[in-house]
Image 1 (cartoon, one colour):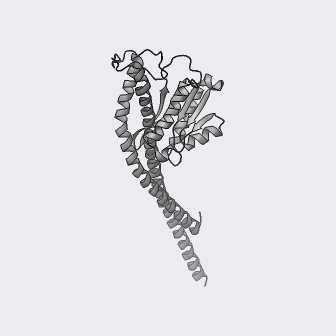
Image 2 (cartoon, one colour):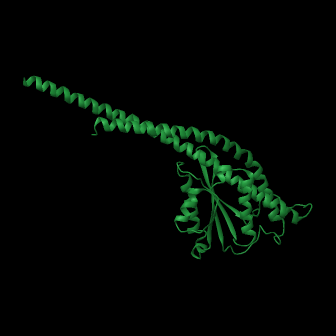
Image 3 (tube, helix red, strand yellow):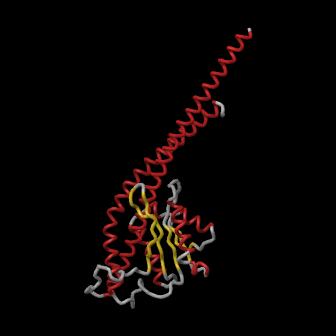
Amino acid sequence: MANLKEIRTRITSVESTKQITSAMKLVAASKLKRAQDAILTMRPYAHKLGEILQNLSSGTNNEGNAYNRNGIQERVLLVPIASNRGLCGAFNANVIKRCELLMKTEFATQRTQGKVDFFTVGRKVSEYFRKHGNQVIESHDDIFTHLNWDNASAIAERLLVLFKEGKYDRIELVYNQFKNAGTQILTTEQFLPIVPVAAGSEVKSDYLMEPSREVIIDELIPKSLRTQFYKALLDSFASEHGARMTAMHQATDNATSMVKDLKLTYNKARQAAITNEIIEIVSGANAL
């Protein structure tokens, strides 16, 4: 059994850690409220705009539509969206594992041919994929410092340009979708080419277009794609704070339980020491 001084030092250390995790939980909860309000406000608009985008894609001739070309998808660009910091449970690890799973299954052929690249958002995924020898063409790790429409649109526009120029045939987003503070849904979402309405869908795709199909393709479709990307960033941002708040809550509870156990151990050790001292005194008195 450890001596009393070692146990006291351990109790002090755990209590200090508990104060830190408790403070981090409060900070994450404060940031989560703002992030949650942002994504819940944005989601209905993005969802409706996405429906319109799919309908237009299926209701128009793909000829001349740079965002809906068909053919063999040779070059693939994965866009993992994670965070710049840790201490948020499995938030970052889940995104990394999903990307690795995609490379081993759906894009195994492209990976063997060296045709799978990464466009990372978040320092944790940027560092991981560079460290493991993957081709990271761009990193945008500072977006979450000033997450707004203008900054997100600039990144989304870069993805649109890469696809329109034919450098990549498919772009996939991998991120955590926000459900609530304790639940994040790991999501893989095809960004480009546009996913048309599935056959047999109840959604109607018969449109009369004004002023012209070309104007709609040039204006509405890019705006919808930028909105889709911005929504993914907001989802990931809210999920990060939810995951961190949950992780810090669990860490605080664990620290509380550990302090309780350590104090019990300390009391037992102290009682044993007192008992030994009494035995020694009694034994000495009897000897005299």
